[in-house]
Image (cartoon, rainbow, N blue to C red; front, side, top):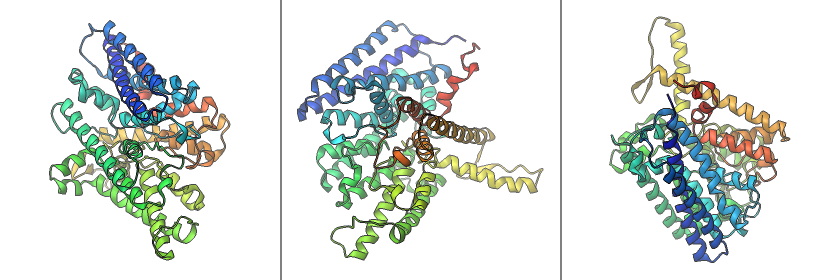
Length: 497
């Protein structure tokens, strides 16, 4: 079967056109703040939109049909093309003139990884910082899902794109029409973003900082407008608690938010993934808080409290903040968790592999996959004793098909294999052991901060250029759930059928 190349290039042009439109918004912000980058961002927007229009014009006679193969190509190359065009504001403005660094920052943004090469974030023009946060927000719910929500044209064959990109082992549909599903998800996404912006502004942030951090939070991205990230507001606990709330919501399946708004709260509370997700975060927070309180040296006590209460609150807040930030792969930083104790360094490294809920904007393996792997593993004991019995895995009181179980096991094996290969390559490129395993796990899980020289108070600027490109590949593969990217590397994908 021959690939429908015209629809592929047409949709590439469509995505680039949308990207240019978002750049216009960044140019407007730049103009408002008179940061000197307005013309550069505008030129980047015009260049991007022109390229998109040209691509759409020359492929206007395409066949409006997207088969699975085209879907995988559109999603993977769509993200790459968006990242290439998305780095133009950095390059044109001179904020990040180096191509490797500009591409790294851009793909880190779109994949919501949040790993940065910027040494002095606060010296960047406001328009550039806003564009940086906007790349998070666009990539959070998914570029293709955005296109499906806005452009009914993709309603034909749209499910292939949605399934290829939607995070998690399954893409829940809230409505029979995929376009309506995407619109509902984006309505919740936008609503949460506006709500967090307002609350952060009321809590003491400037409007600019509030908007940028809301964009980064709901996308579980982690780019901040401050060099110290959220540690900049360690003397304002309310700001950090607000960010924690929205990180938790962003790491929750957005379908659960939809049910909650529809008044189906019991359905949310009975959901196995949500219960595991919430209980795990609470348990991990308590454990980390106790270790911080008794073993770590906390210097930034909460103002206005007696010493003991201040240390308790500060220990609890930092523990909860970093647990949620790592589990949801947001990657914001309130403190350097690698400096607390060796136990907590290993503990947080382990959290790199958990991930948020399926159907959230979080990266990582995802809670649902861990649940089903654990359930299937425990059932193997019963199957060993009762060899003739058919004992299926159940999730939310429903039988999970063997196909899904095999798919999840295959995903887990591929994920760990790619992590090992990723760390080996980084080691080959000159990174020490701790930095190599931390960088690979963080990039593949879209976490952001890592270990060693890539710790939470450092950045990825010191990496060799080849290591930055490799990390970019890991970010893309992790964000698109491995199969979407890796299937393009298999010989049989390109065979005519």
